[in-house]
Image (cartoon, rainbow, N blue to C red; front, top):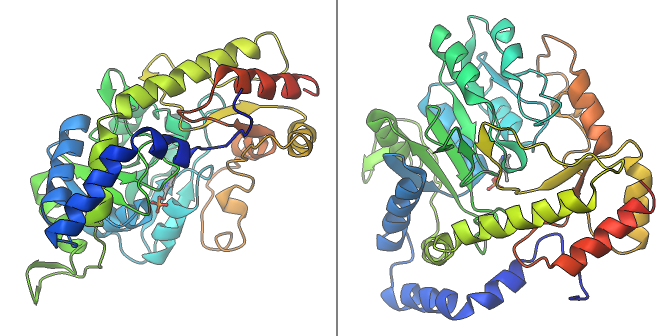
Length: 367
Ligand SMILES: *Cc1c(COP(=O)(O)O)cnc(C)c1O
């Protein structure tokens, strides 16, 4: 067994493809093109092809992608955006930055994703967008969500920051809604060596608008047609991500294989293993279990120096920064239970079976 267990092993993954990554760095360094250029546009084309969408626009982060998506859809101060309270802060943060209000709908207890059955009653005249998050790498049940969204003419922004390659009914997520938002944060399934993000859409007019927004609202230099921001995908990152994209499907399979082994190790125990909905393909950005005695198990892992994550310990509707600016049309009991029970285990492409057995043994001692 490799003696150090990592939550995510970014260095181990780099070591395996080092010659190709280093060559990509040298290619950019020698080209003199350090902002945008061919590496970025080729990577955009490759992501569009990989996801089966028409347009892909690089930007500086997943958070920026979410903000640009809402700007392109005209989200204004006073508007409402329906989203999940059980995710990373970026969705809520960008909604509030634009002066809009997050409206929280509870999650499905099995997938941890926004429960589409709660969305219709949360819609008001002010609802400008719905942002589901494909959490942990599992798809949201999109068909019922799309049906409600279409009924009221409300666009859907897919937060797919944890879900590149995730499938819903045989199709990759990202092009199912109006705009998809990707992050290349180093720990993501397709992670850069720094920050990065991308926007995807099948709508040509929106694609043009998004491209202007991330470039200071400009199509032609020094002519500013709309309000924009400065948010570019770094050229060096794009060149390195192009190398990594070729390995992504293999890496997804490695994660799925590791998930199968964890499932087997926890069979017939008090550890509730991740539910994989029949409608999709989970890419296991996180392998997240539920435990009634989560905090006791977590303390034990800490003592044994086994890394773990709690994603996320405080739901967004109870966060100090957002409590007074968000709307909860109904109580959120499923979310409030999930934050007490979830525990994410080490999951990455370099994990070996002995490490997984060691982790599972220590959890089963206590669970
Ligand atoms: C990582 C993440 C983001 C933010 O991405 P950054 O690139 O770090 O800005 C947004 N939403 C979710 C669900 C994420 O996991």
